Image (cartoon, rainbow, N blue to C red; front, top):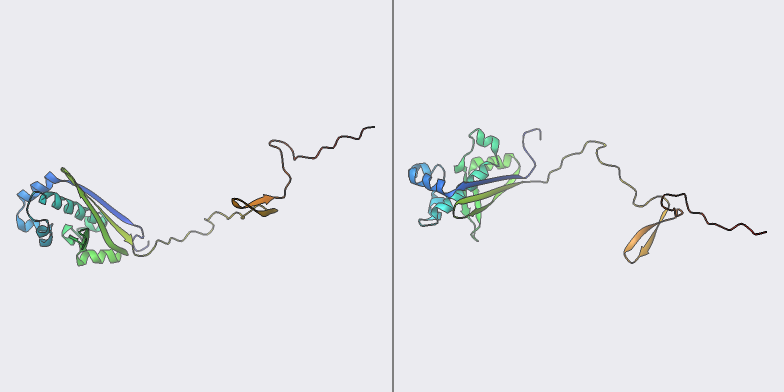
Length: 190
């Protein structure tokens, strides 16, 4: 589009090693972790054996959300803290966007961001998806559509059969590779 927005569905995918997030948690002061994770996220994962894997999945989700807006991410207009992962009433993950992220969503004419998380013993994965707020309607240049063929050949009649209607041609039958079939009458005998 002329204003730089895109009417297409956007998808961001990210994977992260859980050991990398574990090192991040050990080496980073709590105040610096708040530049990546919100207080609610840190409280939601709790303390315990699965904490690192859950935070790794949330980190991957934040990175996947950033990949939905590559230009703004490269310019430093948004960061991981602009996307918070929460759970809905059924426990499914949902993205809570900061005002800056909501502004980008509106500017790009997108709906809210859907996210899916997964993790195993060694890595975490997230997929973020944002669809356009309205369907994509791209005008075609004049003459670019192929011409429509008639529903049935000229001179054909419609018949009803067991499988529905089918065109029945009134043209004479032809033999494969030969001229049209003609009735043959033997010459009169004398």
